[in-house]
Length: 459
Image (cartoon, rainbow, N blue to C red):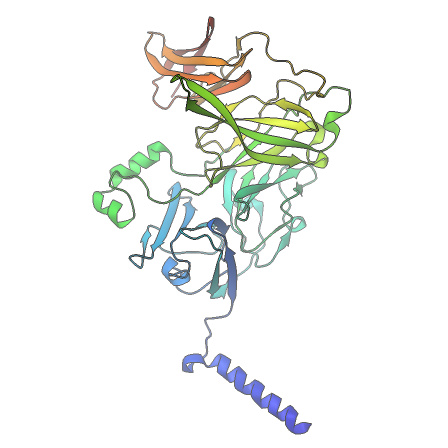
């Protein structure tokens, strides 16, 4: 018995010596490791541990095959990115070093199988996080706490703060909303994980844009660089970026709540669904544009998440078969066989929040017909004056082709578009990107109906 005990002790000592004397010296720099299970496509992650050398080559190397990694650079106002190309065996791009406390999109390319990445190195010196360390508006947030945090440990500051997580299994965003009492409410996000990054909206007056560079920033970037830069850092010969822009969330909500529900059946008192419908144009047999629709997403809204019918949902922009800038979509709220349709709207490439989506008609029972606008009408532009874009709504009593134009007081046309629209309420977003300051007239015509609104553009 004693001999067996001594054998186990000696074996343990030899194993300990072996573990601490690899390559003839103690591995003092390896004090931690972290395992990432990554799905094909985009993964939003942070690094709880990193080695001394933190280039993408040292941290990732060739272990994930063809892969892109991007992060948002606060100072540059755009993404930094790097891509590993198996053909050349090298990394290209302008992302030179990785860091803790930074949110990274890892995009696995040319694979249908999950990949595992093990990172060894020094763990973060974990610190207690405070929301006050972030700016107003949108922020990327990477935990630096080193362990799972409950919502109680990280309460919101304001009642309209948002916490958005990326579900790489479903390729869509999930949402937690702040409610009065400094609490988070979500049926999808239950805690903050140390190896996942998040997108946070702090509800203050100043909105900071987070996302791809604006066209103006992009053109300045082109003018500042030369052709060698394009080739070295992965730009096409026409100067366009070669990396895939990560998806971003679009928060849609009806802050005024669903319209008052009819009294027969308490339709809005329980759970309901919200379908996201995309309108697509196609060329018909006669060569005319036709309007077709498709359901691109569905949300299940629990009764405890929709106080008096109000709800928020997060749509995914630009991931797989999701929604893309320029798409025109609308929402359909359903409870049983009852439903109601929202105003249609166009998805912008830089507006992350539409918190005023309206439902012109109440949710009714199947035996109560949903009323449609009885006559053509056009609303007031807002904001007015505007300096970036303005929105205007109009109603159609029946599906028809609509032409909308923007022209100055001298009659010169700045915008001239024609497309079919469905019956109901619609919202147009008009950009002032190429306009000069002055007074403009916005005209909407359909058949014999015509509406005009005056709007001022101020740079």
